[in-house]
Amino acid sequence: MTDDKDDAHRPQISGYGLGSVDTVLSVDDVARAAGDLGRDTPSATDLEALIHGEPLVRLDGLVAGYGHMEILHAVDLRIGAGQSLCLIGPNGAGKSTILHAIYGFCRIFDGRIHIRDEDVTRMSPSQKLRRSGVAYILQDNSVFPDMTVEENLLMGGFLLDRPAQAKAAAERVFDRYDRLAQRRRQRAGVLSGGERRLLEISRALIMEPDVLLVDEPSIGLEPRFIDMVFEILHDLQHIEGKTIIMVEQNAKKGLEFADIGYVLVSGRVAMADTGVHLLEDPEVGRLFLGG
Image (tube, rainbow, N blue to C red; front, top):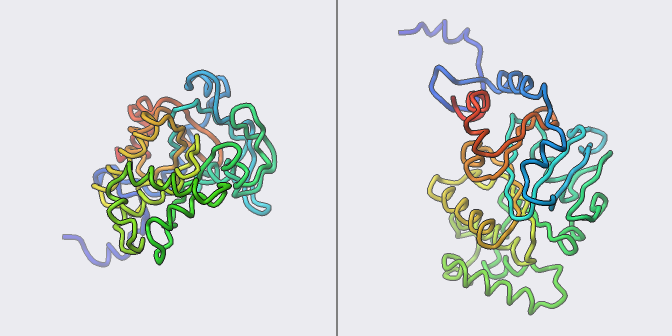
């Protein structure tokens, strides 16, 4: 039995809660160890070797952040049409900031963002959605709880020229997902966590985007709903040909899903490889996969 006084004097360590008691690392330990991964930062040529054909989304030397604070430092990114990419890394590495930068939610200090061959660096989010087919699925619960499921879906078509277009797109969603069709006239506030996530994903599909930016799809969900959400994303990629760039706190789940994985450390890409190879990397396993 341990002495209570000894326990009181032990340092309090915050951690990821993964692995056995012998493998638990503090957040600070993970950040320090992860910094060693980036000694050989992958080049643009290395990144291009991981994609099929020409890049659909390309970031070149992107420097971005918020206000006067620089979060991303000369980040390169490549992903081909119909592929998926998962961003992992320690807290504060800049993973969500990459999604924000692509969509237009943060300040771009330097570098370029291309969708296909078009420079979209300075486009607004609405321009990127309408003209370039880029949709953002937010991390936080973003449904309108007092509106019906159908009304929430129709909100996804706010940029369409005619309301009838949004209505037709909503009907296609209901045809695809019976779970939502059964609840179409119920308030969104009564949905389960998994159903709300399905609604958020479906609302982003109303504009028929080519690229989905997905921020923490599993956050706050029970395991059975996590599996459901990843099955939906799998179908969107492999059946409908969507290109998916994802940030995922469950690194194992994200890398199992994705064709490509990037490890971000301190606003830079420290590692890049196929999802399968990163899962097999012992250092990635020790730092992010629980041993």
